[in-house]
Image (cartoon, rainbow, N blue to C red; front, side):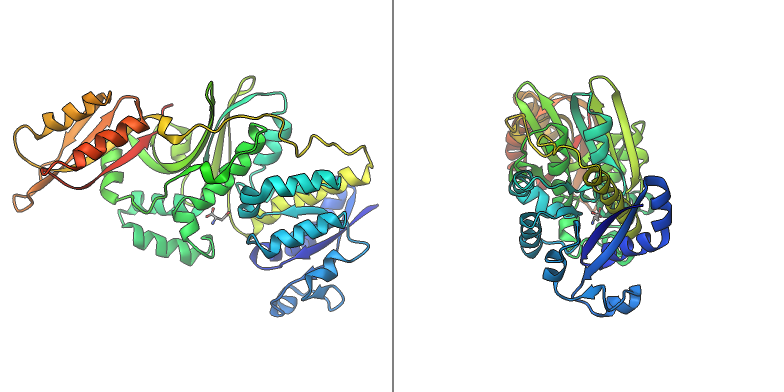
Amino acid sequence: MREVAVGLLGVGTVGGGVWELLQKNGDLIKNKSGIDIRVLKVAEKDGGRKKTLGISDEVFTEDPMEVLNHPDIDIVVELIGGTTVAKELILSAVDKKKHIVTANKALLAQHGVEIFDRVLKKEVEIGFEASVGGGIPIIKTIREALVGNRITKIIGILNGTSNFILTKMTKEGIDFARALEEARALGFAEADPYLDISGGDARHKITILSSFAFNTVINHDSVYMEGIDGIDIKDIAYAEEFGFVTKLLAVAQISDRGILVKVHPTLVSKENPLAAVLWEDNAVMVESDFLGTSMYYGKGAGARPTASAIVADIADIAGRILSRGEYNSKRYAFFSDLPQVSFEKNKARYYFRFNVLDRPGILSKIAGVLGENRISIASVIQKETEEKFEHVPLVMMTHDAVEEDVRRAMETIDSFPEVESESRIIRVLVD
Ligand code: HSE
C-alpha cells in the first residue's frame, strides 16, 4: 500500500471534519485510490480539541512548526484561516518543499499570485478545491473536466449564508435582520458575518474561480461588490410579481473588451435553474464553447462537505507525488493576460423602485430622465397605498441598459423633490 503523510494546521470546525472523515472512511479511500493517508501531526491552539476528537498525545501539538519541520510529512493542510499567520505558514511550508491543501479563500483571492508563484518555484503542489463552493468539485471540473473548453461565463451562488437569508425572506416574508440571526444560529456564517452579507466571501470565491476558469490574474480589489444588506422584503415581493427571485450572484464574463467580474444581488427569472437553489446551497453555472451550459450544485459550507473537498485534494496530490511524474509547471501559471473591465460598462436589465409623490406628471418626469440616458422601460407597477402615506412605490423593469447611464439617471431622479429617499436598483440576470 502506498502511504502519504499529512500534517493538519487547525482542527476547528473544518479541520475536525477532515479528522473525522479520515478516521471513518480511511479504509474506503485505501480501497478506492490505493493510498493510505496517515495524519502524523495535528497542530491546534485549542487544547480541548485533542479530547473531543480523540487525538493521541503523540500526534497532537500546539506548535504549527512541529508540523512544518516534521521530516516525514509530505502534505500540510492549512485550516487556520485568515491572511497573516496562515500566509506565513503556507509560504514557509512551501519553502520546506511540503505540498499544500487549503480552504483559505481570503488568502488565495488576495495573495494568490505570490503563493502560486512560490509553489511553482519550489515545484510543489497546492490543492484549494474547498476554497470555492465547499464540497462541490468545481475547481477540478473547470481545470480538468472542461480542459477542452474555452469558458465564456461563470454564474455562481457562492455564499450559503446570503442564499439562506434571501430564501428565508422570500419564503417567510421576514426582514433581513431576523433572517441573519437565524443564519448565524445555524453556524454556516463566517466568524465575521459581514463578509457574507457584504458580498466579500463571494468576491473571494469568484476571484479564485475566474482566475482558473479564464487562466488570468484577477485583481480581487477591482471586482465589483455589493451585498444583500440593502435588500428590502418589499423589493423581493415586487420582483416576484415580475416573475423573478432575488439571489446574490457572483459572475465572471468574457467579452471583446476583457473580463468583467462582479458580485451583487440579482433578479433571476423563476424559470432559470439558479432560482431553484435554495437555503444554504451553492451552485455554479458554467458556459463553455464545446460543452455549452453546465451546472454544478451542492453544499457550499459546513464541516463535512468542506472536509470532503479537502480529502479529495489530499488524495489527488498524493496520487501525483507517488507516481513521481515530471512536475507540471503549467498547473498554477496564468498564461492569459486579460484586462479587467470596469463595472461602469456592465450591461443588464434593471429593476428600479422609486418612492414618489402621487401627483400628475411625476411618472413622465422620471421616464424623461431615463429616456435621456438611453434607458428604455419594459414594464411599470404603481402601487396604491393608504391615503395617510404621501408617497407611493413606483416600480419599473427596464430593457438592457449600461451601468454608467443608470447611475447618471439615478442621480438626477433622486434629486427631484417629489422623490423620497434613495431609489433602489437591482440588476436583472439576462438569460
Ligand atoms: N460563510 C460561507 C458561506 C462558508 O456562507 O458560504 C463557506 O465558505
